[in-house]
Amino acid sequence: MRLAGPDGRVRTGVVDSAGARLESGETVELADRETLDVAPPWRLLAPVDPPEVWAAGVTYERSRDARVEESETKDVYQRVYEAERPELFFKDAGGRRTVGPREPIGVRGDATWMVPEPELALVLGAEGAVAVTIGNDVSSRDIEGANPLYLPQAKVFAGACALGPALLYPEDWSRPFQIELRILAEDGGVVFEGETSTARMKRTFEELVAYLHRDNPVPAGSVLLTGTGLVPPDDVSLQPQQTVEIRIAGIGTLANPVARAGDLL
Image 1 (tube, rainbow, N blue to C red):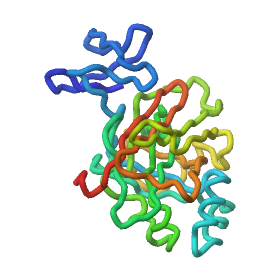
Image 2: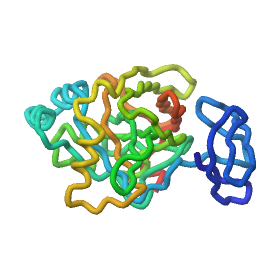
Image 3: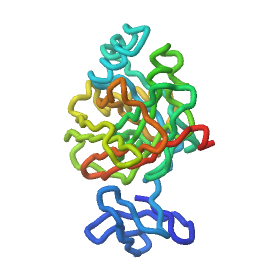
């Protein structure tokens, strides 16, 4: 995990039974072990500062079905789901649109249907994935559904991605990850909740990473979001003052308030 200390300097450390044990030898007590929140003056940061963030789409059958239902060009998503080549797209560079735990994610002012997309995120080394964290690929379903060529506008805007709260170095990469999602109203009421598993992915992590690196100079430390299998119903759209929580056992809970993207510029 990464923390900003009282002096503003960034520290890294590991989570154990005592709290956050920093490389400096300090131990910071956790205010919430589930979200890995720490008490002021410490501040939890995104666990990695990626030079680039990429994402994969239509990697789960549920995602394929949702895209087909919402799109005016329905065969596009069915074809990419069945194709050998996956859908890969650029999400961010230089951290301009990516936030950490408890920082606000954005909703576009020109969209009517905004959703979180809870995903397992791969942290890439020089040759492949070296760690995982939680990612939120915030997206406009109505903009992408109007025309797939609008994908960059549906996916790339202020506060469009969140990462955290910690990195996990899996001992067994074949073991599935359970992913849980909750959208909470301003008063704490549950707007939507659901869960899925990476066991339902059609594509493997290795396959996605291999295609991303084809003739493409992706720098080490970059992040690849692996797609979502959780799709809120049509009547659920993110609104300012809501909170999105994504939990993956072993990593923690990534919690982010929702704000207007224009207010994050």
